[in-house]
Amino acid sequence: MIVQEHFTVGDRDFIRTTSDAGRYVVRDGVSYSEACDPAELGRVYTEGDIMPPDEQDMDALMDKAEAFDILVGGAE
Picture 1: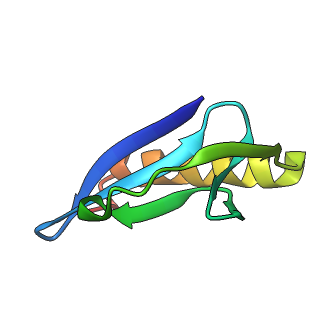
Picture 2: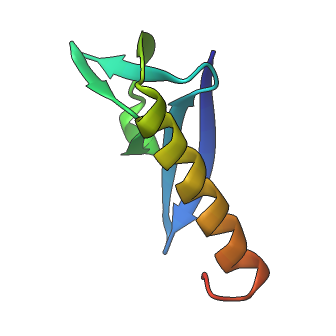
């Protein structure tokens, strides 16, 4: 399923789009492991092919690194 997370950088709103099934997200025929877009663009993604396990692992690792930074006060 497509998952969207809203976040703000400075005073600008963004939407991060991923798949909770380990699939690429696809827009206009181009596949992404994740997509971050300005919210006002209203871009729509669908699920594509399954990502290779090493790419899925990297996405999970990046999420964990971000959470760690937040917990130890290293992220803004």
